Length: 222
Image (cartoon, rainbow, N blue to C red):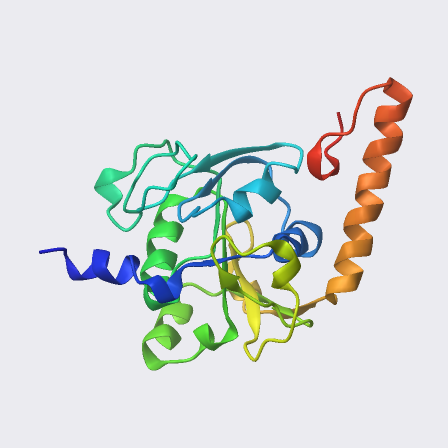
């Protein structure tokens, strides 16, 4: 019989992709990243794909389930004895909400520098998580525009629309003293994130034009 934790991890109700603009918002407004970033619930690669477009980042991916056309390791992230990678500098992921607390605990024990989890704002609730946040204060970056999550494989054109759920990036940076955390900040609206990302792309394009090289996907300087 499948262990209960694995059964919950495979829940079809948790299989949602993170829209690209939500990950771009993290990179643009919330936390600087450099070095190795682990995405341990990679799914079809929505978050990892955006991270790869950011300079100075080396991506490591895994998931507990196999995915067609993806060769990353099939690993249960919650089983720390099964981790095949060296300690990453950062962990960025959208974990299954039903086991998000367990993900946060393992991620904080694994990453050297920071952890960023894309979660419903509802994650701040519950007595159990109250005591967790007392031990591990967090900065919360709340989306001012609602983020619409859709089942894996949905075309991006169908990822736009109304949502009744508020999402946020929960970020633990180990270089910030715990007493200076527990801040709440607002992420600019989606259209502003688009402008900021486009501006970054144009800067990269200008650099590459001067070097007579093509711009890489996502605007990464060549």
